[in-house]
Length: 470
Image 1 (tube, rainbow, N blue to C red):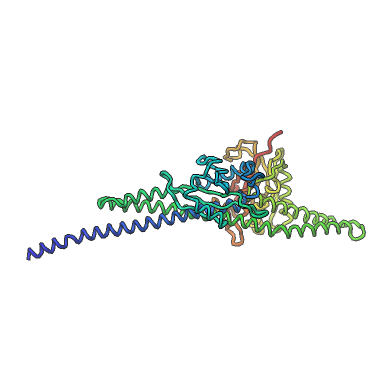
Image 2: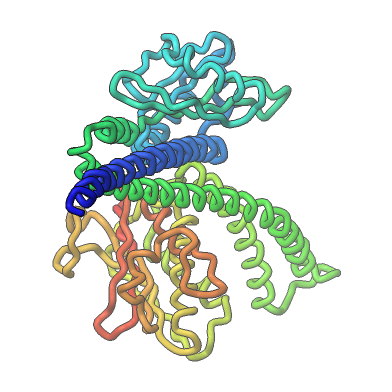
């Protein structure tokens, strides 16, 4: 009996070893499968991000073939200089290695946002990326290259043809967006650890868990970045659509108002109109439709290029025009509108139409927040550090424009999100009002502050630099 037991013990001694080997083999296979799935997901996410960046650059009209095409062929140096800072900013914001423009004939580098490439020299990735470039040029589409290893870096590039929109749609160049994928290096290291011995298997599992969690975080960050880019692309399309939808009705209204003004002025037989309020209303329609047309065209330009038309403007006139426009919106009887302007405010350097639109957006939000009763104040004040504001702007070198209301205020939990595009707390809101305000103020070199007055409600302040003293 003891011998049989001994034989059985010796025979069953392989079972734990087989179990361990099988378990390690399963773990190794699982890790190998996870590794490949993560590698594929990250590669797809990186490719999607590069395609999104390329599409945003083309959709925003930052890169236009008609503008970039030089008189004698090649790229226009002046046009390249105008978009250089924009492309460098896109490179920084999207964590790219380089943005390039290639000549479509010999694929020489005509422009580079990075010091990695020499302008006028050959494109060093042509041999490995030639297939993706050819597909982009021949199919007139956006493509991405395979991920390649260059030294210790893993690189991936996106390509798109740059075409002229006028004439015969000539191929002007090839847009290249390049980014490194450091996470592939991490995966290679993990893969090396995965083939180590049995004694390192347990440690390997821990490393894989940590690496997997870290890579999952990178995937989430990449997905969030793609979602933000998708929102910005949708916003650009929305701005274009709104501009086109507003143009024709505004033109019709303006022409109708002009004809109405002539009729009022003549009254059929040269008699003057005895209703000055009617004359004022017709004049106001003409002014506001003209302003609407101008805002539509220039806001569309602003959303694409961030350009403003700056002039020296009196703050009192700006605030008064906003208050007048708000009064004509048929405010509820229970809402009191106030105007507060400090004496001795110098001129402010701004685009009056864009800044007026920003204040009107704030005023509209204030009225909607208060409902049928409350007090709204449109103000212009001198900036002074003594009022308790913290800023890098010196006292006396800026003014405060803004709107204060006695509504319910802005909860702290959403205060950090109110300037995000497409974010709104109202069911019928489009989430663009405060986003537009923030963009306009930043384009003026200012800043936006959200404050809570002592008596409650909300106060949104635009801190703007004054016009330089001449």
